[in-house]
Every structure is written in C-alpha cells, then in structure tokens.
Length: 168
Image (tube, rainbow, N blue to C red; front, top):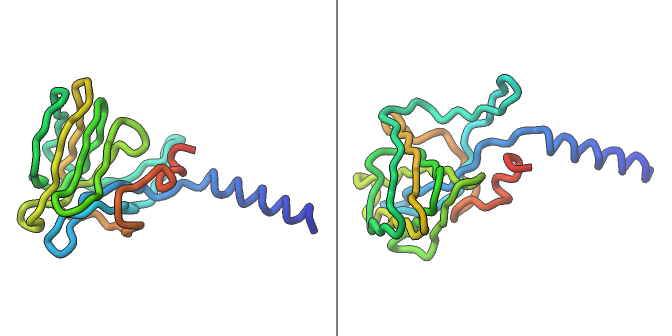
C-alpha cells in the first residue's frame, strides 16, 4: 500500500509540473466605480513548437514607453483596456482609496492588465517609476476595449504562487 501511495504521489507531481496553467495576471479592475487590484486567470494556453502560447486577444497601436528614473505621474486612468509588460526598470502602482499596491519589474510577474478607464472608474490609479534606471514598458491596447474572458482568483495582485506553473 505504501509503495502504491508513493507511486501515485510521484505521478501526481509529474502531472502538476507538466500541465500548463492558465495565464494569471495582476489587474487594475473596477468594482462599483472604484479601481481595485485583483489577480485574474485568463485563457488557457495552446501548444505550438514546444511552447505554451497564451492568447491575449487582438491588439492595436502597441508601443514601448521609455520613462526616466524617479518619475511620478500621479493619479491616472487607463487610456484604453491594455496589457502592459515591464521590460526594464520598476513601476509602483497604488490606488487612491486602498492600501493595495504593486511593485512590478521584469520577470514572471511583469504583466499587468489595466482596465480602469475614466468612464468606468472615478478613482483611477497612481503610477510612479521609482527605480534608478530607465523603465521600458511594452503596452498592448486591446482592440475594441473588450475585457478578456477571465476568472477572478482573489483580491490584491498576483503573487509568485499564482504564477508558479510558469516559473517551475
């Protein structure tokens, strides 16, 4: 019985480590007209040429922003629903009506989805770039401002445990 239990535990471990998870991203979402931080689970990946590919939807007018060190933008709203990915540097996002905040730098937690446009959020979010180096952000506005199909995993930003399937 012990050998069977060990074998089942080993097989379960293999399944967990070889099954790709959905793409989980921190999101500046909106609840009752107020911007909030949530961890969302987006689409499941498709396989292609040995990679797990995560569909993000159609994008238009993508660009890379270059922001000098120690830049404070203050209260802002998303110009469109968009994915942002930090390529270099550091971003600090906080919310005017909450203690929730997130520091984003390159790595497995570097993608954020921002949907708090001014027409749906009265509070927006606060953005600053406190790092010592230039921050580079790739931004991908979603065509038609369509909120992607998602499941809310929890309030607050995603943590390392939320993306562990992507980083091993």
